[in-house]
Length: 212
Image (cartoon, rainbow, N blue to C red; front, side, top):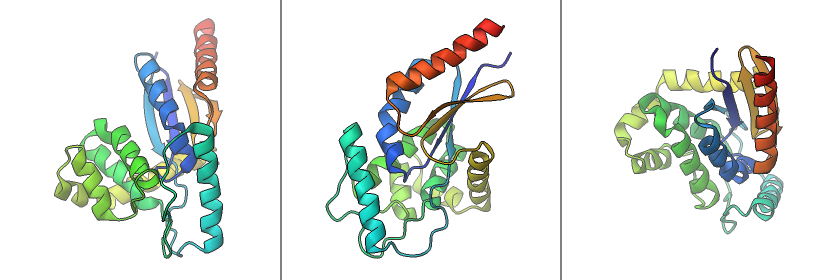
């Protein structure tokens, strides 16, 4: 029988996913021998074209403060989301997809690097040059990355990620779904504590063991 598959639905420009980053890292360390763990780029605000409004900025910064207060994750609030910023999450997601085509081992590292650059570093991760620099810092040739990033294939595979999230019924991020055979079992929705996530995974695995 195939090993369980844990799907992690997230977006690199989702603040609660940044808050959840230490949890998913621990889950990956704890369960890597027992199941495969894969990232699905959920598509938070793909294709946004309008600059952020002042009210929109205040609302998002309010969420950032909530995430910081609850999780302790680093945020750079000063000059965050400057006037004219377009909160399009598609390029950051496509960057992760593109790097996965070059080196699958770098999917999670680039995802985290983009999160850190955006939230803690205040960098504009909608820009291809910024994304290429983050990939280069992980050892990827910047020109090869940009070719992959700008390809029709990367765009199509990114859209496929967004579609997978919708088809799985995911409506918010982060979310974890455990697949056992053809069965999908929700594990967690939102930024849950590590103990809660572990308990849900262990209960699901125990139930599967008991039925075999």
